[in-house]
Length: 224
Image (cartoon, rainbow, N blue to C red; front, top):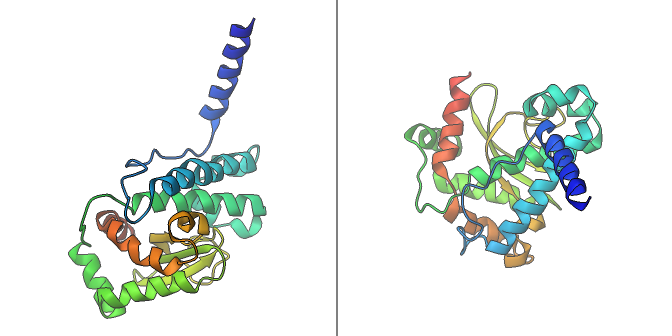
């Protein structure tokens, strides 16, 4: 009888997972791969608890609604018309799925020539860009994100959003397609850096995946 109950539970759980609209992408490196900049405990909690929670709660929030059949971008583009649960969890899912990919244990990755040229033209220099986005993250009151995005004209801009909002949402003032997002919620850094958010923002450049950011940039431009 116990075996039958376990089998039944497993079947129901598998069916629910199979029907889930959104799934969490496996982390592309070990939890301890970014040690020195982001500690293993933070990465494990961040990915397996916070990130996973947003994905699971998004699926619950859209169950039985038209959003079950929509892409994440379609959902984000109309969050002003949707519930706070969808807004928060759709943003949380999208933001974290991007965040994992723009981090890497590979050392000294570099932006593509095309992206570097755009950064220099827009911000003056790479150092000036880093200072600007780090300030956007440091100045964000409470929880939120700092972004490098591409606007509708193909131009780069830096912005910051509260909570799990992002530039794809119809509720933000500065709209565009994010190519780099830096999580400044306390759960992203507090175990290692406590209240020193600026130290976290400085260290994150050591593990930034410029190859991924460049790919995202060129993907956006190819669709303009």
